[in-house]
Image (cartoon, rainbow, N blue to C red; front, side):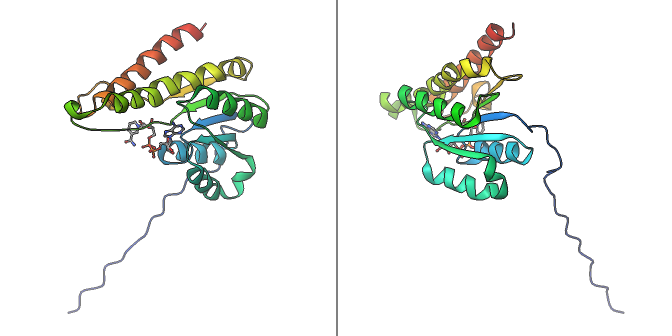
Length: 193
Ligand SMILES: NC(=O)c1ccc[n+]([C@@H]2O[C@H](COP(=O)([O-])OP(=O)(O)OC[C@H]3O[C@@H](n4cnc5c(N)ncnc54)[C@H](O)[C@@H]3O)[C@@H](O)[C@H]2O)c1
């Protein structure tokens, strides 16, 4: 007796592109050249939004544009170093000009530098705080005037489990993400009115 060959079925999960929750929404996404920021850009575009992807990496932004396919017609790339005040100012101005206003700011850009705390230099510690925490603050501050003129404005900040669970070798990263969490709560109280 022969054993019948097993039947295999391949299931492909597709993105529900029929959703259009962001049609007419204008979004600026930092960290848009990689990872979660890039995925956010692609989803906002897929759901009808107009998006500025901002990143310090030109290659990352080029990759995002390729992945956007035909949706790239609603995508603008802007180079920014969120740790640099002048760069943030210029990037937010270009983004608001390109979009004709701003409704959504997503602060996904961030860096992780891990290491034994006794070996972490002051420069490394400060760089993590500068990019993650100060960079998020600078983006929000510069975008606020346009957001407050926008339609149902929203700011999305990226914290991490590192801010409330203990991960070793990540003191600076945990501090930066805890700072983002606390800053976000304070801003929510300030602007919920
Ligand atoms: N991946 C995870 O598991 C995880 C977990 C918790 C939180 N997060 C947070 O989510 C966010 C995205 O993480 P990811 O894993 O997609 O990271 P990633 O490294 O893939 O992407 C980060 C992006 O930020 C950009 N960037 C870095 N420094 C910048 C600067 N000074 N100015 C502008 N852009 C800069 C990088 O070029 C990169 O494109 C980060 O804030 C990270 O801390 C990630």
